[in-house]
Length: 327
Image (cartoon, rainbow, N blue to C red; front, side, top):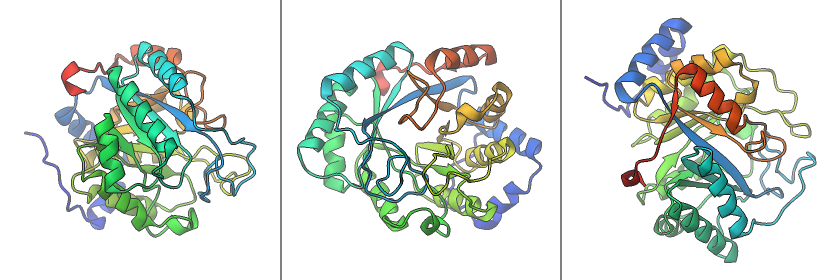
């Protein structure tokens, strides 16, 4: 019998999970994972920045913010044909979800949004799950994305409500929750996670996971990012995140949200083979891969297709294959 989804987790319960010895926690999370998922299957995703740089917000981690001197040069919104070609290459490499990100604060009802809708339709027609991360949007815009064929929308909470203002001041926590609520007015799935290593405490990490765990329903995808420190950002000198901390976040996320896909996202390039194996054992079942060792921009490293295929094969894991009926 599988554990049912719960949306009434308490801070005290999550704190107790953080106090469980790590290997006991991993075993507990692994048992939940086996109950709810094929433990040998990994979702393979690729992220493309379709509009890079000139980000108007002051996110302390972001290489694309105009508030930081990171050397990332603004680029215009990509052309439709270039996006489709990239998606086709990704699909040929075994990618099943293609994510498109734009450095916008929010979606505007303009010609650029129309082009994004065309991108969604064309990539969806290839048979890929399409995800976008475009900033804040309203229910009407979400409806248009759904009509174009969007499968998932990424909008991270980033951190706890208590620590949030230490990282971002140009968008409120409630606005992030409102965007998720707008997506929930459609059948688009929600991808929502956060970043560890931004100077937050364990209490903040517990509060962040609590915010995700009380969402009803839970996000279908939960990316756990480890900060990629970018020179020129306020967080360029943030301390390292030990692998045990990352594994604990993944394991607790798996226990709290048993049906969600838990994704190892940014920061994976810092992990060894055994580090990643432990993450998968603790309940992660998704990763981002890339064409050119970069996940989002020239400042966010990511493993490439070939090395990821080798790694999964050595672990005895297989990349998820999309069934036609799931698209």
